[in-house]
Length: 119
Image (cartoon, rainbow, N blue to C red; front, side):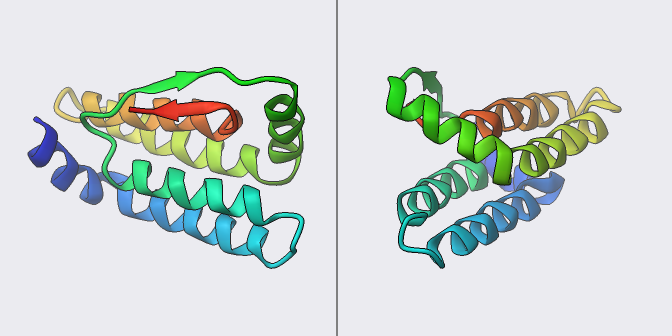
């Protein structure tokens, strides 16, 4: 389901969510201090565009924890709400449940993107 799922995913809110992550990354990259956060946004935008066939492993140390707190305050909540909204919309139908679950995975990732590994 990887390739076909990713194609249908773009129609079911994936492309709009990817644009949101790219916008957040561009806004973070305006400042010199925010460039590492912006780069992480661009990496996650790639995951958001093609999420099927990928797994996310959460972890990290104190540095990741501090960055996640800053992220939640400034950018994480709107991106998580957007992904949760699309997840609910997709889960209304039986066919859309796999896409809704991917949106919920991305909503969790939107709240703590630092210290995660995608494989």
